[in-house]
Length: 327
Image (cartoon, rainbow, N blue to C red; front, side, top):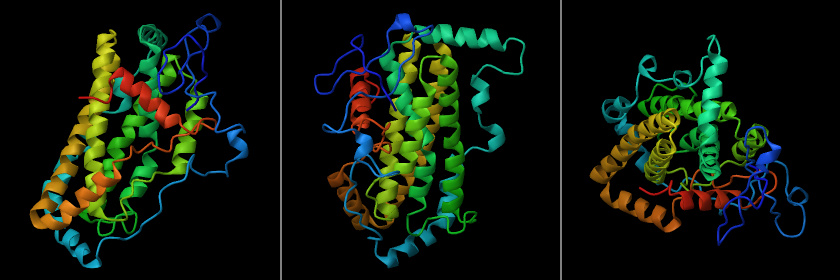
């Protein structure tokens, strides 16, 4: 994510300003999710190994769950089939990104794109900072599926396992995949962003992975996803509300539809944690306390654009200022 900084945008007391190129120099206002910041006095490029995260991750702890507890999740497969898979939608009943975008096969495509761009011009720059950050987070989906498949007792052992846990992970991933696709295409058509910088940031983020500190434990993993889906539901819901306030009903519909999916997924993950509290209250309380002590890290916390080691913190400060992270 790259952000060319310029005095015309807002300032944060804690972080440097995010900014946009001079409006006069652009036919349609664009911003670049990047930063002119450097890590220390040297160029970041000279300090990093290829494909390494922008900062050191925590000490890695693996397979902390006692092996005998794997049986709990094996015994819950029928329960998951009846109680978790019901929170998925059949593909034929799912919305698709094209439902919300101009139809490239229609004669009115150019006019539809023009209308989309005209609406986008009325939306403030800081809103687009948050929308781009949300899109980049959604586009790192391969990392999140990988994380779920590190969890002992519930991972997809073959890539096409018929277990309820594996079916959930694949189908959840398939539903989530539409989110990044839709936001990516919208932002491309809006003309407000530098897509190459965004694409580079996505590649960096997927290459860096994430460090949720879940230790291959489904107890920790499902607690993490419960909180995380809640956070994304709130964020997308707020971008929907703000888009409506700025007069872009179509964009509000896009963000609101994504938020609805996130709420449904939150319900499923929360139900899993509630079941664990029911059958193993002591183990689940300890897992919850562990995750609260560690603090829930956002999935894109290793976001990097090739320049700014603190890019995620800068994105977060804009989101906090805009109010997109608060209920």
